[in-house]
Image (tube, rainbow, N blue to C red; front, side, top):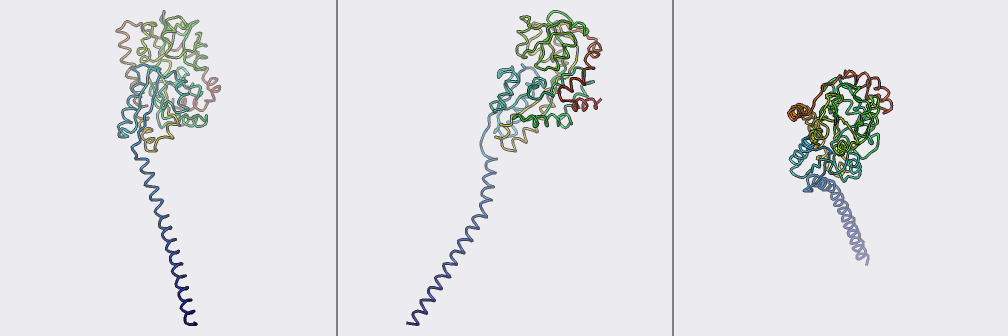
Length: 358
């Protein structure tokens, strides 16, 4: 009996050891399983980035071709599709088919439109400081303007900060150009500031520009770009200012055949992206977008200069009246307003950055 009990105890002990060994082996297997889980997760994450998911995006601009902003959009769309192996496609909608600038940017807040290339002053409802570009004769020449809006300039960096500070679901990809701005009138040639007295002048929705032209004696009238033709035709406005490519693309020579070489502004534009779009795209695609935006912004500047030269020749051949202007008569009125208007905008820092380039 004692022998039996001893064997029984040995058997129970052995069983206990086997059970413990089995538990230990189970822990080791679980640990091994846990250690492989991150690898499996990492592989899954990589698969997400390199997946076959495709994205169809929308870029909008209000101008009619031929125009630097349309060129920017088409270049961006073509290159983005190439560099993502066809995974990201962008359709470009020009001629205000998706609404004016403010309507487009409203849609971008919820991600129904993904990109806009538009006039900086037209984005003033979102970024009031953009109106700094509406200070006539602020830049001495095109070289100074290009230096100000370069992708690595402190001015571009400041505007990117303003997007963040204002808290909108929008991201600035870059600043660009679009050409030099001239003044056109339906009936008369403008040669000096006094000619603006009492003129019903179409302007974008920029309070700063309204104040400047008001000081020059004009009667400012806010009107969306796509309504300028009909506005001149019906007498709502008599005059407007624009780039030559915008003038030609919208066939405004048909209703306002007098162009004055005021050259009061270099057209500043912005390339903006919806943050809703940014958040849904893989990081690698967003990096490509940022790189391409820099290239597109440079293209916009170059195309603006090219169109200025080509279109001026074409307009002269078409019989449009081109007049030289006493620019000093404009400058003596507007230059004393710089600090006051910049202060109103909360843009004294930007004014100083620009003036430091002189």
